[in-house]
Length: 305
Length: 230
Image (cartoon, rainbow over all chains, first blue to last red; front, side):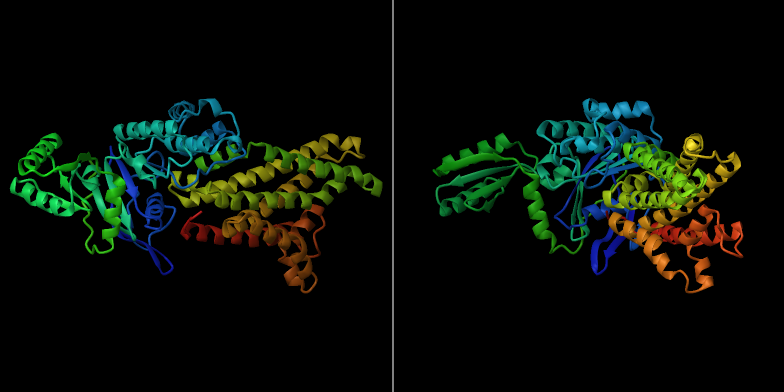
């Protein structure tokens, strides 16, 4: 979809030689620091901004019912009712009244349909905007910060909704600063840093495997334990005052048992032996702090699976 | 066509109704006062026509620029693959509104003129209404172009109103050639049915409409190229 696309604003390069395609049937998390180029990438896909170089091949997917987006704050006619807003957008996209009813139910806004948008809470405005984006039954759905102002229940509903849209075969791209909201929803991830795609692949592979955290009494004991574990074929690394052992597909409980047995056999007292679930935040911080030194982006092809 | 239909749907709101009532009220007020000045209601209609068209100018400028400042233009651009269709659909809808306002004002004025003095002939009333519709259409071109070019409600309103009210007045009277190309002034002549010497109705229509139509062509060219970052 994006072929070697560059976008410059004056002297600033917002997107730098990016080749990227959304994955049909998947929810892709689009993450990056402020100013990394996420919004510009979305605007390029939607045609709101023109590339300085490269090509955005949108001919077969833009227009009609192919592409829909909610970018930044909900852009609604505040003096009109939610229903009127939906009807206007339905008219624009060729959707019908049944579609209006469908998205109203999906976004749980049935009870506020006849209220003016200006009288709605920020959370409900967000829901109306999401309903508008869903009207066209898009093949590609772009959502920029969709969880802004939503309460926990609405976020849960949105996750289900996004999942359903993807399961129906559409590509859903969700950009969010709320990294925790993306965990459990996204199954692919694209990391943008300084205008370049630094990672584009499965979500789990980016986050990494779960790990064990082991801690003996004292740094010297930790180093001794680390050597002992190596001799038992368990590979770990010092991580602050503890040892971190990545599971890499192994059974966590079996590894924990092996660590415990090895330590007990050597007479090393453990003060901690716990399972650590990887978080997107950790992986994100690691990736963005390391990314400035990456010269070749480890991009995997955005397969249209 | 979808862009045009969606834009028309958007116009069905309280603000539009209030503006229509204001246009009609202004016309009726002017007609009712014509008698005190020993003129006919039709004369009053013509006096208020250019001001009514100026209201439609302001509306077109606000609608076009407001789309950018509120971000609602994004929905149109994302949904419709052709920016030219978006531009023309929105312009056509604003023109429809202007013509509709003129026809409504003319119809109400004709229906109530008997209560204010002499009832004008149907042909004369239709001519005055048509001239109001023309003025409203031409000024809608102007407002739409400035709105799209500036993307800011205060700037668009200021530029359009300053041009139509003081700027053209300041430029008038320096050169006969320049006077012919002051669109607001020529439009006023048209709505008053008092064309200056040597100017035909077709010439007046051309001189008043051409500058603003060209401005819209420029706005379209830039609209096709410019990024939308709002």
